[in-house]
Length: 335
Image (cartoon, rainbow, N blue to C red; front, side):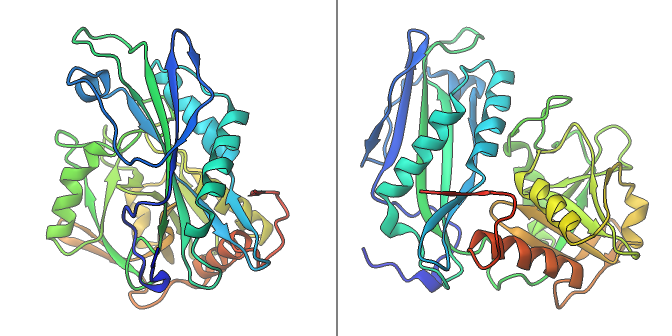
């Protein structure tokens, strides 16, 4: 293994192992560590025809004291079960999920980027329906695979502001949520509009509500938040968006810093009044938005630096994750 830690990006890099669980005859097995990065599926597997699949994303960090800790794995276990319940998949024990995450991280401990490099070990659980069938119904057999890989920043250049573009053509795509069921959702619907954003020189697409195109929903890869002129943390409350664990954590951190939090409907007309706008999620933590384009209108924020409030939130979040700041809420799960 010869990894240049300071040159890591956010892409798949094979580690030593992954852990796999199989569901058959109404129960999950005990799971096993595998060194192969390949799977074998029937061409009629449910997941490939009817999309019966879901995934999660979380991270492990090498902290200042040299210990490796995982950020809020129980929250991911709960969100995964919320998702798979809606997709008619069998529930997976939350306790077993956390134990499995710890086990695969331990087996790949030397792939966790060292403290000070700014990297982390990304953990990607994915569950798929594997039953060969062409009738439309839930599968009877499933695989849960938890893979890990060392990653660096999602966007190159650190936490510098990026451009975003508003998408409101709901006939072509929709946000990641699933109607009135708050689940981990699906990113496929955001691929086409994201390609449009990138062609326009923007890093991300910002979705509006599918009914009236008047309310801000979320970015294609992460949740939306903003800082008002009087210093409040505002984030949309909508049944269509991903229930982000990062956003949930940032709201708590904001309260810890005596920043008032408002989770509510956010009108697109408010975009011109916000002092700061950011995208937040597991992969990006916080990415500041310097500019939002909507047809002929452009909303501009600080295009050179992350805003002062967002910076406080970012520093507190990463401080907790890397063990530089006390973990008052017991979010970090030690191996």
